[in-house]
Picture 1 (spheres, rainbow, N blue to C red):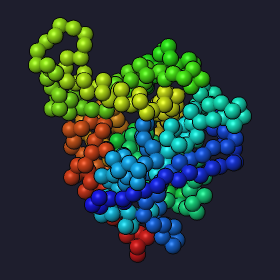
Picture 2: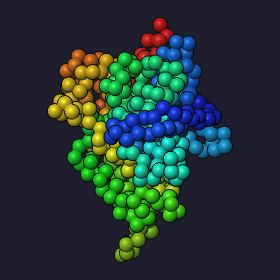
Picture 3: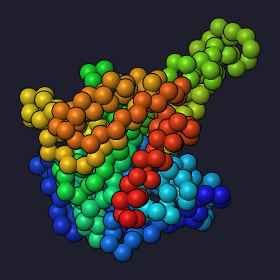
Length: 377
């Protein structure tokens, strides 16, 4: 495993101090699943927090001893000699609250009822996640992150760190992200949630008690989402109008290769992801808006930030278009903050932040090397 962090092991932390959500709901106790890579230096100044996107989790890099095919979702970015160099940085990845990969979420057992939370799990926000992440950092003795970073929803969390805990983060890397969702994006999320909510097997979110999974709804939600993650050019290049059998069948069965691909992605996702978690994650996306209580004034929202920023966008990302990243840059510049911006030419749409691209990786490597020089001096 060249330039890999190698075999890794997930860890979990249990918190007995209640967490009050932005909604007013209280979680009396909870667990967070996380992984770390690299070594924390003596003064604990080299830590990087990686925040995951909608369907992400704590397994960011490396493989597991019992499953060497289970590669971390950002393994191309994190490891020895990679842009996020684990020879220099101590990297922390976690599964957010409400998740379905080990952290407390809807499929976890509610200690009060003895049953799975299901529909009773509170609606969660990006601010709530940042609060829980800060508690994990406290547990690890990290008083300030060298950087907090992520793509998409992960970038939103990184930005919120700069607003909720301006003294606890030196750099924010917001990749393929936005200061809030557009009406179109909220609409996409609503259609996806509706597919799940109207599935007869959903049972109001308590499908666990019925020993069923709302597979059809979750499959449709993922299919819709996947369309928005790709660019038109990427779909055309990969699938075009190619027919599976080479001829028209004049039926409603799968005929085009793109249909086969989407069905495959939907089935794969529905087999491992929790429907309630999907609802929670998309709601957190919808609700994120640092300027909501400031008359929509993003300049005022970012006035609290003290961190330096790298903002990265991709030319074919129409879900989180470059102009949305430029809104972040303009607000930071208005507040005379130190901000770098890169707009990467890429054919992969929103998924570009996960791809290995020479220009993108060069930008990340150079910026992160600059951060490393700060604590190496």
